[in-house]
Amino acid sequence: MREGHLPTRAAETAIEYVHGRRRLDSSWAEVTLAARARCRSGSPPSADRCPRVAPSLPDRSLAVWYASRMALEKLLDDDLLARARELRADGRSPKEIARNLGVRPSTVAPLMREIAREAAAGEPEPAVTGCWVSPRWSAGLTVAGHEEWPDLNAADNPGSGLVGVVVARRHRPRRVSVCGYLVDVYCLGVKNALGPDVMNDRDLPAFLRMFFSAFGDATAPIEAPLDLARHLVWGALDYARELGFPPHPDFQPTSGHLGTWQETSDITFGRDGVPFYVGGPYDNAVAVTRTLTRSVGDGNFHFIAPVGTAVGW
Image 1 (cartoon, rainbow, N blue to C red):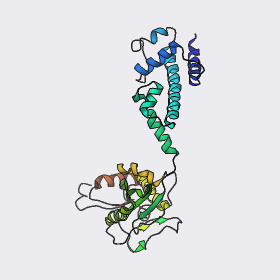
Image 2 (cartoon, rainbow, N blue to C red):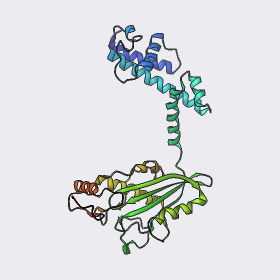
Image 3 (tube, rainbow, N blue to C red):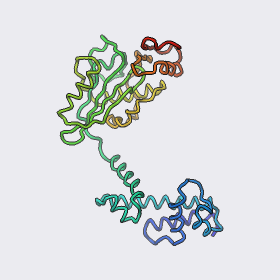
Image 4 (tube, helix red, strand yellow):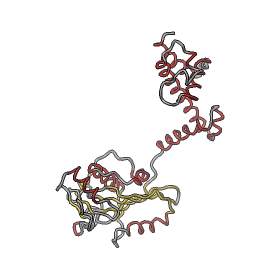
């Protein structure tokens, strides 16, 4: 057989196997088993690493052989996933699926993760049971439209640019899953996040009092639409990234409560549109100001830092 025909024959043989029209012949079964057992490094196999395979292919280029083996294995893996998906839909456990397919449980484990991911992607988002923001969230910001977004009179107190946001979604009857976000709308974006925390409905008011008490305002948090929370958190995150600041690592597991984001925020961030950094107790103020200098240039941002931090600038 000529070298150029090998990939075509491999694909045709695999397809016939997938559709159950006939079994793989013994030589190709040997190729598949040896490839899975010994050739997982990602580089073309050599004769000494796969002695059971390479000697049986004396006239075939190893590169062509490797390409055909990869095409064959991809089709076999797809078929394995399809069969595992059917068995899982019938209520079989991972161990039962492994026995039915004639493979080890370790081979089935990644298939179960993929099936679970597919199932999660197909499920609707849990219902939003509530969304709250700290009072005067809009101080120093410009909002395009959205007159329905609630706030107190922010002009009387420009504040530090720190905004609290809480989103609660239904977890199961009488229980909610809650995420909280500490957002610097003037500069750093998402400074911290917590959750998802699952709690009883009756415990949610106490959680809100605890979370928003950190803002030092006796006024209760403002109940708001999810759309406002999304534009605040995702928008501030995008703004901070443009300045060179990534979100807090704890944001990733909480992002699902906000929903996916493919939009541009209707909020103009920065204090009056200009980056304004207010140093916090755990910030590296020197690193922050250096990053701002690189991203927007010296003199194009404002900052307030703790006493003594400016030494050595």
